[in-house]
Length: 513
Image 1: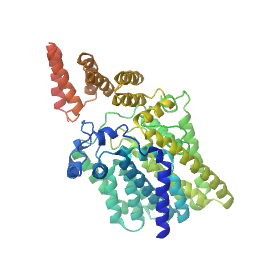
Image 2: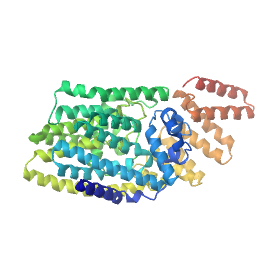
Image 3: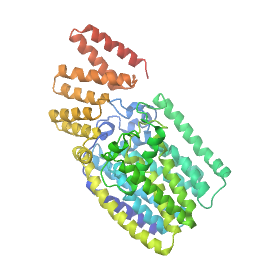
């Protein structure tokens, strides 16, 4: 017990060291709408969080998001720290350290090498792919969902099934990615010694699977439909999914640059969209990484089944990329928080299965990887200190990434520099091909802020045209409010025909959920 407490304290200290550059910073990106400007984040609304999706975002953009325990977590921080982001960030760091400890315990038990588990937990803690989940307050749901998921897996493997079920419920209510946990548990049951027969593993998975089905039913009732399908996967689904997995594998092995919130590109445009070059480097590197890991797993004969379980864990945990539970999935490193545990399980299996000489080589590689990961994590964490630092970091790597320019525009607007914000938004519209209504809406809002209603109207009209084509309905408050505003503006300008058009669109929107 004493040793475990010391290791937990060491993990917490390590988390504060590598994520220190993010502490003391301000709110960034979605922190503003989910926390800073969200008056619903209050413990008195705890019950509402579970049945009223409008508590997620006062601006009405909550489609596909049902994470009531994340709101409860934010409300607890609000009671303790008000709207001071420092307290929220410290909470995230402690949760990350706790998740690393859970990783160490689980992997140590699976590999039957406790010390190997402690080392793997420390490596997992400093992985640069976790910066987005830990340093960005909004993404706390990834951290605490994974923490509860790991507790569930530990409980099931320790013969405490009902504790596991309770932890699974907590994980699901924190974030929908926990739907994969019963699948991971089934794989561990079948492949990890003492392996169970598939029939027994299926029986053990029935209750967790029923919990997931019940959660999906509750989620559907609360949100009014199964989820938001506005951004389906482009191009060939199988090819794009394969390239996505390869990209994620490359990001774990070689996180050489800073990424944030990437839209999934099609298979045809993968090279330019992901690497910033015409040659699709990223998926090739990912393929090399996966082939090397799988080959090494089978070389490590004594523990190859555990290694296979780690590789399969990695794949199963990435299943939400398919948008099976629709959340407008992006290519974002926060989705690697739980899958990366499977990747390290495979690494641990290789360590335990090879000879002494190979272990020495692997030890040197892991030490170098860990040192690089810790320094890179500290560097990346600094990007989350302020809004401008975040998006400057994104655009510095990829000037053609339209989301980066949107972020820079919002940083300028928050600072009161509307002209610079408009210039950045126009660049974002050009880079995105003019597909997204929210870009036109944001540009129109900048003119409303300066009192220029006449110049705002064309951009707001372009926004609602795109939103209408997406099939948005009354649940999107911003869409409905903009239609009403445009109808009033058209009447005031004496354009009755245009006003009637907006009224018809408004009636159409109100008839849709």
